[in-house]
Image 1: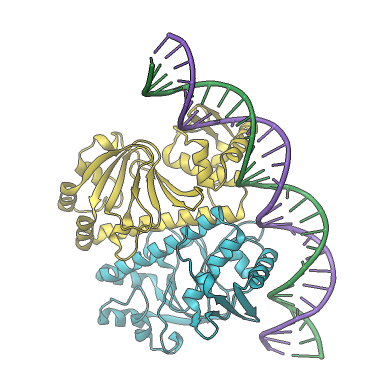
Image 2 (image 1 turned 90 degrees about the vertical axis):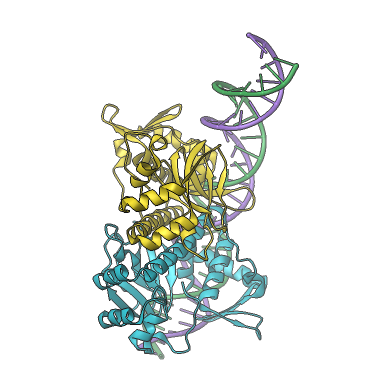
Length: 240
Length: 240
DNA sequence: ATCGGCTGTTGTATGCACGCCACAGGTGGT
DNA sequence: ACCACCTGTGGCGTGCATACAACAGCCGAT
């Protein structure tokens, strides 16, 4: 959910500095940051680890320091949909602050990931004292809502190619970097094709076919774990 | 978003009483309710009136008093998706409280509708003074998020019949009433089939066919603007 | 009233996008 | 160098959208 790109990786910063530079804490008072920092628990999770389970109350607010975490809805039959893909600086588990409702999605690491946890009671106490954080948390939620609405409307109104386009653009804007030399955006490491398929609500085979077609048409070029998105793709950001 | 069912219709209550009994204001102090009430503007809108336009900042928080309002994402080509359908007691336009982000959906009346508006500046001032409302507003948003996530995952993972089932159940639980005599839930007035189609991301014809099939199998029975959903349908509320 | 048009609702055929199965390379990680 | 996990491709079945057609209620116009 973040566009900031700190010069030092988050996992090597002090806990205080880390908190101070991520939403929703950027406007919190210093003493509040210190109170929070004292309770933060950091840990490293292997790939495919479930951190929060759907419909259960999360035990705190989590911050992704390194790696990637997917927010997922699963159906019986093994199929599922990745609703959001979170990278360094993003937070999840906000619903621990809202009493009475469990988490709406399952959070599972896509790769080996470093995370930080702020215990639920510590966060709640902080929110009661500092409404700046509360407002910013609400802003985060409204951005997330808008994103999920885009996913939903895309599924209903667009074909696979269009959905894939938008997903790649979103990923590039958040995690990629612009490269004038290659006149495009570099996206690395690219998620696997089956992961992309679970993001756009399709199957691996179709994603493979569609990506090849887009590469043929000069919209992108991929090699190994790198992908370069042409400027043509990045143009349209308005999304139904 | 509400399950309360007041004995008196909202549009006939005093503004103060009306505010006091809807979320997110149920925990607001009395003097705050009065301050808000002084600025509330009520109005009646004909069917198909656009109240809030996507990507534009709403001019206030709206309350549905009577009728129905759809939150919609439109694509070029006339096709669109109804993400949420709001009835009496529901609110929309929360994003007027979050600076910097426009509305994520267009709000349009489905039928002739009475609404009340709380101007954006009055609401913001109130939120700064009373964090109870802020917290409840956040809870509303998280419920909405969860609902939209259900829509998205349904579109990706379920066929039309299953999506229609869930949509009907949602509508019945929110607006319908239980009738032991008919051993089922009475849903009246039912949205038109084309409206249902826009809710489940399908087309009018398919909805018609699917409803007939469900009626044949005894899952529901419909006559005119009334529909009775059998207990069988209402059972499963857990949703991927 | 009567007529015509308009809007909303339901039913039936055709075509296509895309999901599923199967198999063959290719690639990265340890 | 191995093995597990990716990726590319062909074929096939089908759910569902597109399109066409028919009918009922509603309203204003004459």
